[in-house]
Length: 309
Image (cartoon, rainbow, N blue to C red):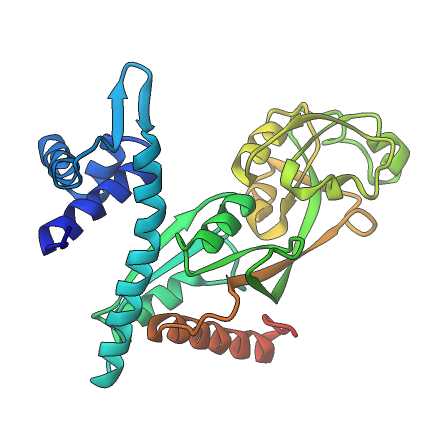
């Protein structure tokens, strides 16, 4: 079949439905009504000649052919974005779409002010489009590999086939307890590694138990899928857990959280930039990386390097 502009629009709607795992998520993201989303999906199915998805009481589910169409669509939209970027280059303009992935709760990190780069893209590249996804490190790496994202900033991970991983910066984490926990009011002199090990910890599975490196005898009694979930466990007053210092700072100031063993218990969490290996960056991706490097230079003069080799 020969694709028309209407087919690309319908395919965009289909991709949004799949990525949000629901028609409702696509409605909100695209600003369409339920009937409009349904119309586009049905139109695409009619053009292709088979069902792409099922929707019922069991929820949203892709058909086998629908899963293949979604996977192939990623390559199509990557090619379209590259074409748009190259055409913009001929006119000395930054165009195209940049899909950026971040882990949760980086907004309080003064050394990683992504909002400033968003502002610069809006000012200097008004024809470009920026999409921002917040997800777990594993999910972000998978999306980079399969073409769903162009770049991601996340905690350091093992080498990933087909991806280029570059060191970005270090994020400091401390062990925290909250008001209501027995250690919250304990004297500093009475807090030791051995005493801390006697309490329950909450950990993040993707951290590979690195959070217990200074407490080999500790018990991981709860797990959290992201930093906000980890903070909720800590704030219950029943668990100890690691949080980024920039994220916990406001609660510490308000007397809600307390850092334990601030000298011997801190963890350095390296952050990296992930992109696809061997792929020529689009003009908007190149612009983003240059702006990130500019922030690195500012931070270097202020206190320490943001990007390391």
